[in-house]
Image (tube, rainbow, N blue to C red):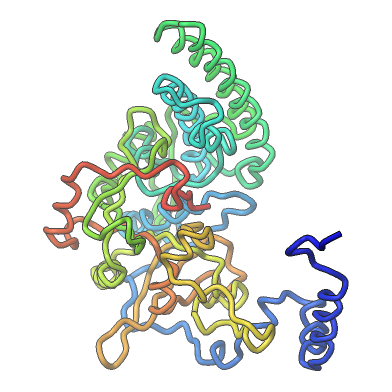
Length: 456
């Protein structure tokens, strides 16, 4: 009987084993990596000792305290609120301050569930079969914690903001996996009910009535796990001069409109991405099918531009004393403990005899599922080389203060080129021809496109 092609035979496996043991360096590497984190073992000492947290241009005041999203995927909310609080702290003469991340998280869970149910209706009405790739994609992950900048904007425009002291964290916002498991189960159940109702010829009014009934249950679940934000609140605080101040009673939306928007207007910021795939030319705008969080909210729109422009505008924003919300593939060439994002951070070749993570181009990594925008953070400082080119950025993360420089990271320009995908810049700093691209009709990418990955 002929051997099946491609089978890992005993002979082939024996050859692999012999080749492994023939090189003593493999045994040394095995001794190390079988006992500690392989990424930490590969950390380049020369890169680590050459890295410092000193920058030529830094925003006037960084927000305090360093935030911590705990065991949740709320980085997009934390990064946004970290950026927004900088001018707020300055204007109100505060020592430290946090907006309530749980407040936006609560409303995102409610709105995102409603958005999912309407996507189920939309795809059913346009003829997408249950077995279609789009519906399958939606059902695979009906709700998670991740998000994009336009989704933050939708929440703030509808519900405003609230100090963290007025709606603090809960167990389920810091440890969100159990809540998400419950919601996903109910949303899939409700998706089945809606598609069955549509197949029966139900009217739009009947479908909406069913969604309203379903959302009543979803609201109950979220409210039990996260608490319900107060309709109005009173905020009492001491400023840097130890003076007592009080605001309220006031709604979250009125608080944003009166006390935040004059110094940070989310509608004046635009989202620029850098997607180098040949199918997606620079200078065009894109959106992703079924991507969003608020029915009736603005669509998630990406203005695709070269990485050099994004980097330049990020630096200009910092020099203008404005931190920058950005999205990246955080896990590659990243030493979390040392707080280093550098293509030279790890020497995989020395440890494993082969390189990883940068052997494909940025476009190829997108095409082959090796890379996507997985995390959002904020730039707060920048430095330049002697020739005028950008050398590195300072990054405010939301993983607590026990990593890097008390929670801050160093990100090199080379790393930016390879793993940064998105930056949010104030319109006043963006060239007119780049802003004009937003007037185009967006090209719709499929729901599963990597540019639709949500930062967590």
